[in-house]
Length: 338
Image 1 (tube, rainbow, N blue to C red):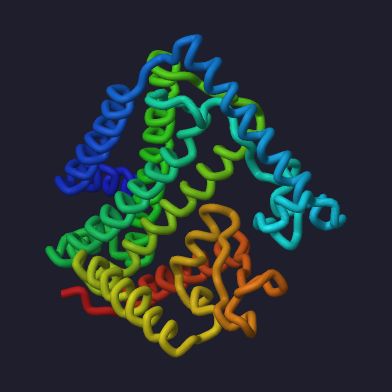
Image 2: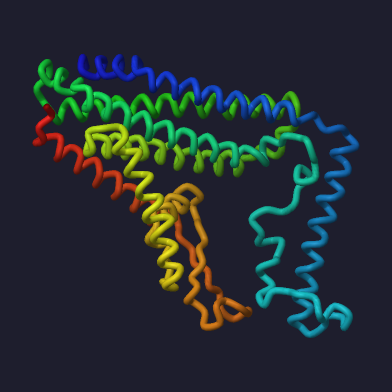
């Protein structure tokens, strides 16, 4: 317990952590202020007009679906034969669409919490992932580079316990900060919607979906923190983590992807970590397989797309994180720290 308390004090005292907290608050404040400045409470006339436009849009979707079915029956009027309809009419079936047009889609200059909460939450997750990675890397990297870990081992000569306490303190602190930041962030925008916008439809399905995204994002934040911590431990410096991520992004995500595209490799996205990250965070990611169809995907017979779900995304992210963390602990146990 004394070791954990000491690590908490060391982490809180780091200027880089304090700077990142200031940047976190500043980014959220700018986003909230911009949203507030560009929103207003809709008038009765605006709401009425938006509802009418949404009803017209839904009616157009239903009409298009009915015409598609009529084409399948051969009952489409002659003047409409040349219009494009998909081979499978279920693709434009309004009853199967994830989301139908609503009035909020036609309210301009009005912040609607139900419409904007998901993209705002993705922005929060992205910032917290960056925050966790940088703080995790600098937390252990600075101590290894400055000799702080050696001094700590003189007081507590148990390498794995010391490194475990550092990692546990980091993850616990990041988790608490992420929870507080999420509540403050989403709460602020909910208040903006009440004061200078509209809440929208906040039903059980909305909160369930938002909760799933938030839970996946928070796990991703913790994994990013552990990865930053592990790479910095292996490289004995904060810059090792930054350099490793930059090298991976340039050499593999950009360079290798370009080479695989030139070689017309099949499903290169399955070799990219970003694909699994996207699949985990969104729950379902769709990619393009250029070799799936003989004609390159032109036409209605072959569908060149394929789907990656959150399950393989989670497995890959966990394997990468556990492998790096395990390697960091194994190297730290035997390496000369002087």
